[in-house]
Image (tube, rainbow, N blue to C red; front, side, top):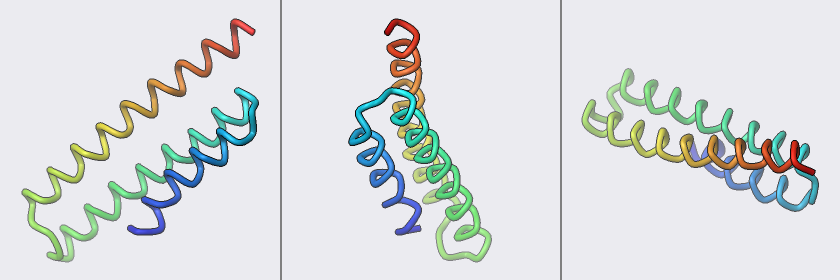
Length: 84
């Protein structure tokens, strides 16, 4: 979980450092994959009784909020790419 959550921000930063919309979008998509991986890990933690169902729902809502923001940024970058 630590690795997946850190990869989200690491890939956002790495994409930003590329200074090109296509690469930036690519790294945002990788970050999105890490967020989906994190949801899967929360589900596994619930299945193994490490967390409660209430905690699972809270974590999933938080990750889905991050996904919405990230998808919005990806769409913004796509529009910028098409306008350039």
